Image (cartoon, rainbow over all chains, first blue to last red; front, side, top):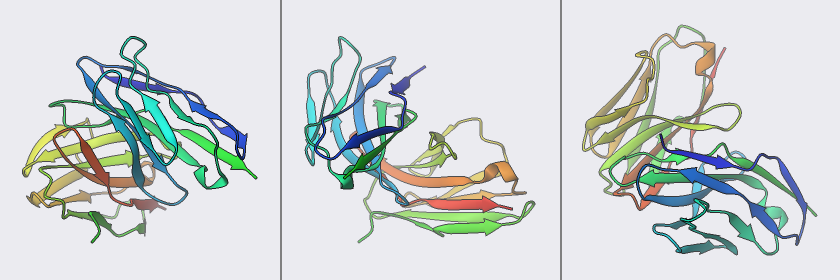
Length: 112
Length: 111
């Protein structure tokens, strides 16, 4: 079945560090890929998305590129801030499947 | 102007009780969902409805009964609550595969 695997957390970085959170997927069709963010005590917010191979999603300084050859959608940010502390979820959906499949989430903590 | 709203935000109840969570979306989306987030933050789909029709039921115990009176509403009723039902429940809606919008969650605690 369709699945998403994220790097194990928690991840702790210092402010202004470079961030990478790895995400790989297994899908029976051609998925759309997403990153969602959950700030403490809040719901899920869409961070960025990509709908086809080689697309790059970007938002708030975060980027992720849809790599079909490596079935990956790694999240990157060049310089993280304390306010980026949250849980990050990679997810996919297949057209017609009518559901999002999530990775297990990666908790990110940024220290000043 | 909240896109997906669910109530209540917090729900504390005793084992064996019956409770409901309500969800409404004003985005005009055709599909609505219930997801469960466990204590380890793992998110798993429970149900999806498309235009009031059940599309997905992911082997959820039949104590959980979703109801969709119209395509803007998807409520979740839970009978005979158990300790293991404690979790955060998220409602969501989508149109095609390009946009999923989530509610802010309902934290259910069964004591």
